[in-house]
Image 1: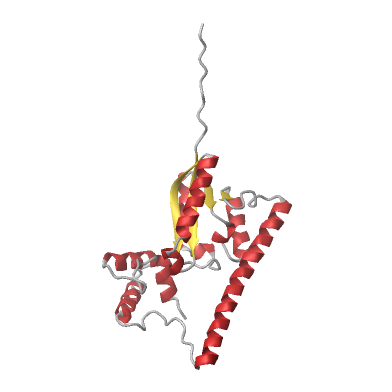
Image 2: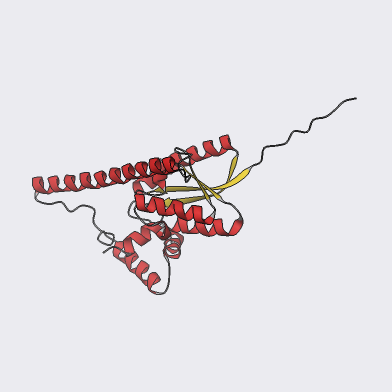
Length: 227
């Protein structure tokens, strides 16, 4: 008498993926592609299905997570559709600030969500030794960003000393044709338009950014809140 053995398929776990790059140059480069490949490889190896991707384009890691459009959209989705896990490439994609990093992880833990870093898969637990290691990595990420800022500032100062001038990147609105676009942004914002609706309106009208690309909410925000 033959016996048959049933094979149980491994459970597929649903997860969101969060990606972030901090400049337009990174948007057009391989930053997002690199993060996506790393997350896809991890998900395949560990039995996750990425059901939605959230991409933060041109947003600094020092901006509070609550002020990031894609992150806010992701949190709403986490609270509403049953997915409880978010996969990121590295912790510095969540933040380049220790305070923001820890606040974000604590918020996930309070809400019962799981944050998984592909490069540091066991650092988001509440084990004291892992918390200490995670915070140390956060310190180094914050230090790295601060050093980059200092190097850029020093380079501008050297140029100014050598040439007597260093204008840096001119604000949006100073190049030909930009003032009309800037006025359109301000008009839309004045009647209640948010960063998402303003960027969508500009893209619908085929208006390009200074670099010739698409508009993203974070880019609009950066321009309109400029001091």
